[in-house]
Image (cartoon, rainbow, N blue to C red; front, side, top):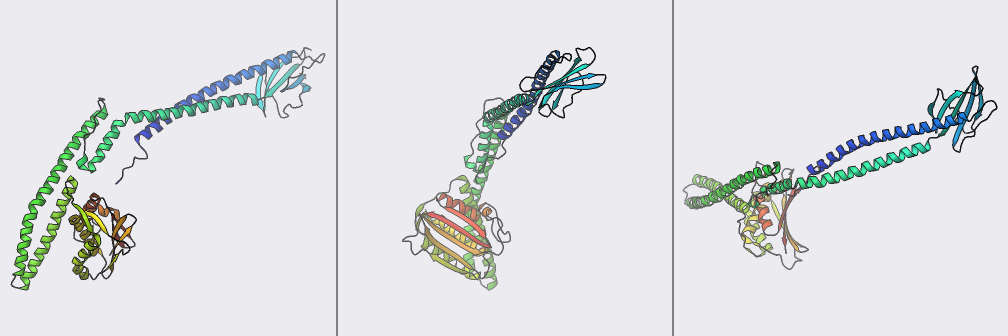
Length: 442
């Protein structure tokens, strides 16, 4: 089973939270600064327009009529009002048609122009002179846009730097936690459990590491106790079980009547089942403790398979099954390097599973073929019911169908033994067909 780092790790969350916090804080500050700068620039532009309108008003005369010309880019409108009669003295050709400015010394926005209005007493002493001067608002908007973009780029760069800084800093801070996680994962392989490096930081990480080390020590002790118990109990049980089985076999041959023979046969069957359980528990204990010894040798896989299928011939016929064997005749040799006793147990377990779970009156397909640099031993059978999760079959104590005999150890032990021999065992199930496949290196 492979372990993947979580998509939403604490490190990522710290970076996102720090970046979001910095973004909100800096964005608020940037908006405040932008509004302040905007008000200052607008007020400065307003004062400039009012001053310009006042100067033009001072240079304007009604009697005699003197009208100052606007500068390039300016628009000008001069009105003279006396006795509620308004007379237009001058209006620039590009002056906004819908522009109307009311009030003394006021600023308005019309279309793309900013207009300033100044009203003063005319030089004739009777009427009022209204001077409206305007300039395009594009330069001011452009300046404000540049300031806005500068603040936005600064915000983005600062936020990026803050996220990277938070990512690096959180990685440095979480290194003890990563060591704790890696050590905790080794609990799945109890024989490799090692103490967690304890940081001398005097903080919660050091306290957590010490607590985890105490917990791992207790787990290690419990696992060792369990392994020792399984090993000792299995060894102690094998001898009396062998004696009982031998005595029952002898008694069965010397039985007086069929009733006694049937009774002894039933007892012998239960003893054999119990013996298999004891052997499985011993194998599990040895595999867990890493003490299972292998004696590799060269084995003719096709000869061994034919010998084992001959042993299972009676069980196959009893279940009304048909066995089809296909050997790769194009290969010069189907020799593999493995422990013969352990490999025999693996293949017998696969045959036993196929016979036990196969649908009656169906065919078992067994094949041995050479593929590239591997020799593939495969066995498939049709099952009574679909297998929902075949990947779990190689886990210990898992049974796809609890109605059958067994303890869910056979495939797990076979998988571990094949792995130790440098080969691989895979199981799959499709369309009510179960397939077990062992790949050996040629």
